[in-house]
Length: 101
Image 1 (cartoon, helix red, strand yellow):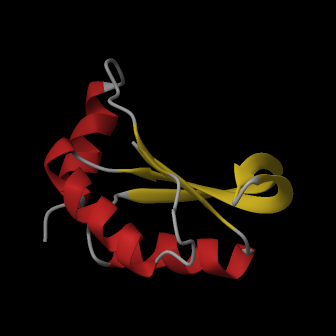
Image 2 (image 1 turned 180 degrees about the vertical axis):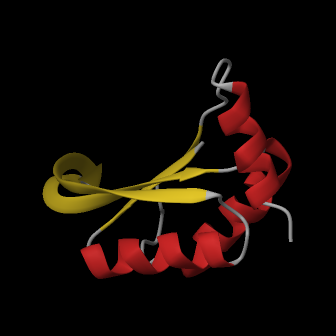
C-alpha cells in the first residue's frame, strides 16, 4: 500500500486516476480533508490536505512511487509505503492481476 497527501482534491483525483490507468495501482482511494501541522522552513505550518491510498502489488510499488514523485506538486512529498502482512487472498490476487500491464 502506498499513501500520499496533496493540497487539493483535484490533484488527488488526478494522481489516483493516473496510477490506476497506468496499472501501477489496482485501486486508489481519495480520503476526505485532513488538517496537517508540520515543520517547514524553520516554522510550524498548518494546511488542509487530501490523502490518497493506493493498493498495488509489491513488484509495482517502486514504479508507482516514481510516478507519484514526478507528478507530485510538493517539493518534498510525503510518500509512504506499507507492506500488508495479511489480507484476503482473493483481494491480493485481484490487486496483482489488475496491476499487470
